[in-house]
Length: 130
Image (cartoon, rainbow, N blue to C red; front, side, top):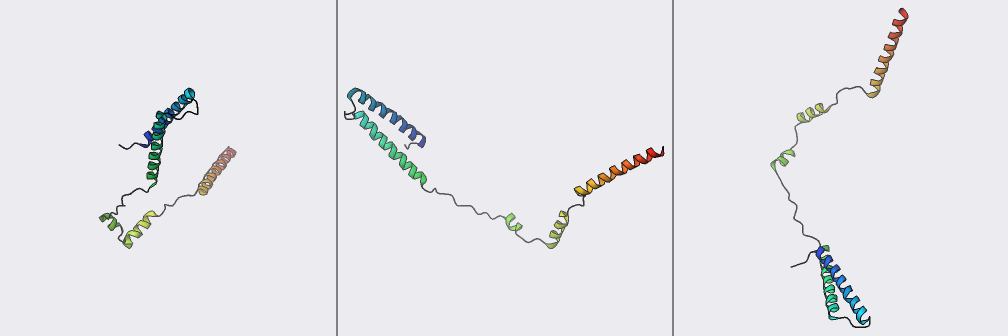
């Protein structure tokens, strides 16, 4: 059964820890000049195989993936939408899109200022008559 990438990294880590422990126990008990034990050799071989498998998987991941071809759909609605519209329909649409007449911001402010001025003048005239 093929191994997943996540477990591959975890296995490499566990193997490295076991290999380091085996090497340290050999060095502490026999010294650094003693040849590696059978357990160390097995762990080194397993580590080499794990790294080779990891590199093979990484290389496989770099290969281009197969993609499904894009579907080209032709429906009646699409074909109908491509038909040219009549001139009357276009004119009716253009008339409907025309903006309604409205006052601009400056016109609104001018009207408001004129109303305030007229109210102020009306108040002065009524006060002066009495």
